[in-house]
Length: 279
Image (cartoon, rainbow, N blue to C red; front, side, top):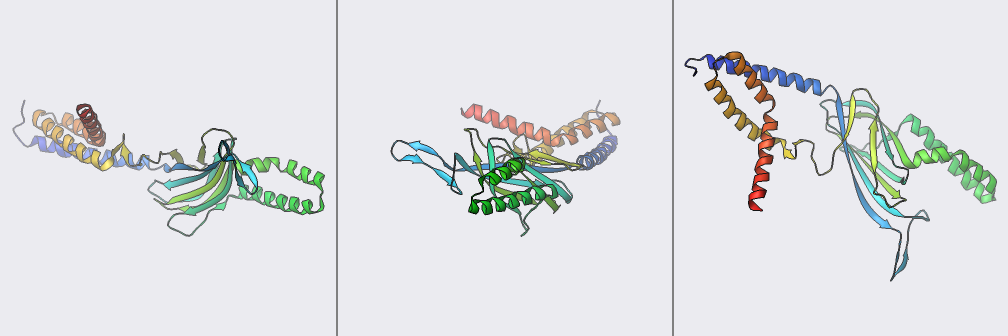
C-alpha cells in the first residue's frame, strides 16, 4: 500500500534521530577503552656468511660477530579520542633475538622516553656490573669477573630481550617511534611486540601497509560516500513502500548504522568484478 500523506516524513525523521543517537552512543562506548596501535618494520643491515669469491663476510658490533643484523623501527600511535597519561610501555622479542642500540622519540616533540622505574633498576645494575668488569679486566681477576657475569645473567637476559618505558603523556594522534639495532641469532625472521598494562588501554598490531581508517581494505571516505548513496536509495524506497512508522524507523536505523559496511562491500564487489572482467 502506497503512502499518500506526509506520515512517511515523520517515520523518516524518527528513524534518522534514532540512528544518530544510537550511533553516537556506540561511538562513545567504543572509545571508553583507549587504543594504541603499532606496527614494526625490519631492514636488514648485514649478514655474516661465507662467499666463494670473497671468503668470510663478517658483520661485527663492538668487536663481536653477529649473524643477522637488522634495523627495527616501531611506531606506537594513540588512536583514541583522549590524551593518555602515565603509560608504561614494554617492548619485547623472542629468545633468538637481541635488542642492542636504541633511539626513542615522541614525534612532534624533542622528548625522548625514559625507562620505567622497574627497568631503570635493571639498567643501572647492568651499568655498574659492566664498570666493575672493565676495572677487573685491568688487573686480570677472571674469577671475580665470572662471578659478576653469573649474578647478572638474569638482568642481562631481560635487558637484551626487552625494554620498559614510562610515558608521562601521549596526546591523541601522537606517535612514539622506537628504533633498535637488532640481531637474530637463528635464521628466523625478527619479531618485536608491544604491551601496555594499563586499565582502559588496548594495544593492537596494525600492518604498515594497512592504514587504520579502512574497512576491509577500502578507505573509509570511499566506503562512506558509496554507503550514503546506497543507503539513501534504500531509504527512499522503504519510505515510499511501507506505511507502518515503526518498521520504517527500524529499517532506517539499521541501514544507517551499517552504511559504511554496505559501501565497503559494494566497493569490494566492484573491484572483484572489474578484475574478473579484465582478467
